[in-house]
Image (cartoon, rainbow over all chains, first blue to last red):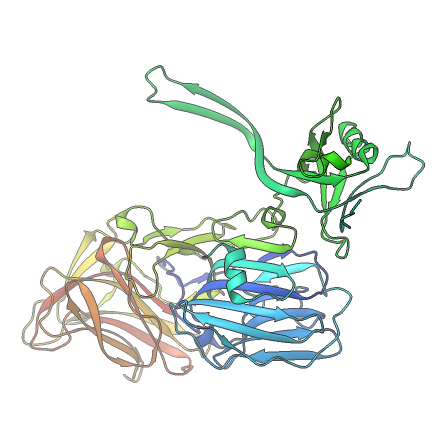
Length: 183
Length: 387
């Protein structure tokens, strides 16, 4: 089902179907206090409302845990999730970007397993979600994989990814911008 | 001596060694890390320097150099160099609290005979130092180590994706994938078709700008069904009403001449072209079209619409022109992105149906001049109807 206009597809005599982009990368670090910074062009996740995973750390199966995610909440806002296999916590923003906006999201995983997410749209002042309750860090992720824009072939969204940087420890947006080299 | 307790190590093993594993604990992770690359290349230049011929053998391999600092176990450090000189893989772990993050390397330099040097700060206390030049045994990139040992991952659009062995997206004539390049046309977006399994580095303009496109981004999209059977040859579209004029061979966003100029020259009635599509599964529809101000645009407005078989418009977008830029007027349905500028003064407009529509035949219509008493023409290219 079309949820948003996507890139142009040439047809000459028959209907066509563009396949999805799938991109897993190795991510060997264990669950720990860390900061995930992602900057992207909003291309429709907010309208599509598919629960698309902008960033997913874990296996190709979304139900397998432990996992850490930055995603849209299927209701027009971005959120982060930490699930250690027994308990999951989510933290959701209350402001949303528009298509074409440059979005910066910072997903924070604290040492006690609590999480929150920070957002800046087009470089404007940051907005922040509430910090969740603590949930113990798991011994390892469900798989040592980092996924952009989906989990396996599911929960795939629409983004123009500019930078993705993951740093040990809990960092501020300003620090992550410096580490990602965007300022 | 004020020891600095490092949390990094170099490991190797040898059957000739009585230890199950040799470990050289580093006082600090490798410092002053520098990126490098090695590849065999051969160059021949013409005498007048107008031609350079270059041949490279393979893709080569990234390398990294880093300083071992404050080392007060010089014999152990020399053993690292000896093991590397003997061709034994060295495993570098920058943070022993996270030992899965490790880099198995070949030592490129120094090889024996080698000499350590006194550490530039603590040499007076006997600490020694050496610069190691390393290459991963996989010949892959060292990211994120280039960015520092506390960086667990780092990617910037346009950077290496060699760490991923499984990027996938099959592209062929029945599954096309395109993206905007900044090559040619002033950087406003040249339409390019990606190769199969090729990650698309697309160029974008800042949200507040119509272009040129100034930054790259890795374009990642879900699958999409495009149900229009003819997206570019508007000569194969049906005459919906009247006798609209159609002229092929117009410049297009590819940088080619696949666009059309369509016109309404009847001041006594509407003229338009149309194409039917069959929707086999209920879905939300999104229509899009590349447009460019015609040579003689209508004084009122142009229109793109998609109607169901009972004549209901499920999506509509009206537009006029201001200095070559489309101005969106009345719409029906769900609004997506603002018009996006492309090469050769084209703009891509889009509009969706408000909800999922039922199966059946849907008709995509383009009106160069929507008001029946008006005339005018419009350049068009690349119609899509996604379901």
